[in-house]
Image 1 (cartoon, rainbow, N blue to C red):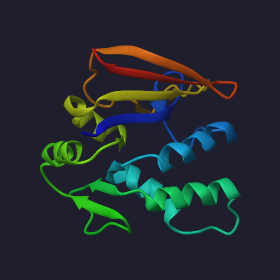
Image 2: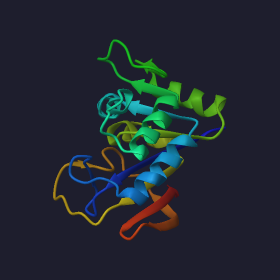
Image 3: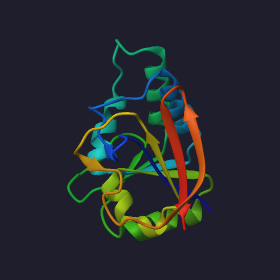
Image 4: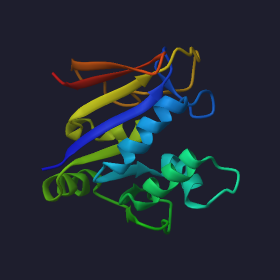
Amino acid sequence: MATLVFGMNQSLDGYVDHLAFAPDAVLFRRWIDHVRGLTGSVYGRRMYEVMRYWDVDDPTWSADSREFAAAWRALPKWVVSRTLASVGPNATLVTNDVEAAVRRLKDELEGEITVSGPELAGSLTALVDEYRPYVHPVVLGSGKPFFAGPRPPLRLVASELIGTDVIRLTYVPA
């Protein structure tokens, strides 16, 4: 049975915004290794559209960016959307009964599946096995909250300093 994990970079005050701050080289390397080890990822439409950036090579990318793009492209993806007509390579469109589709993935697969996007994660709270906020020392004051849906009772099971200023917290439902 697979584990469903929701993890994203977030500000100190709890917001996610890939345009306001980004991982440093140490954390980016961790994300590369993380994506490489995943069984798959479930994306909401908006987050999937953001990540489609990695589908097309850019000659100005660093070696790490090229490595991340290769890992992301190889990753099986399930995209939840009622508005998209199609999705890119190595992706499957999920248009209805999202909870049943994710339950099926958890039952049929082994390893770790990430859910990407705060709203989608909020709609799947009953199925999320771990929450992993990567807390950056940035205060945004507003934006999309990490917890965009129900706020489940959680229990801290691990913390890790990554580089010099990012802390990854690991919580499980209490």
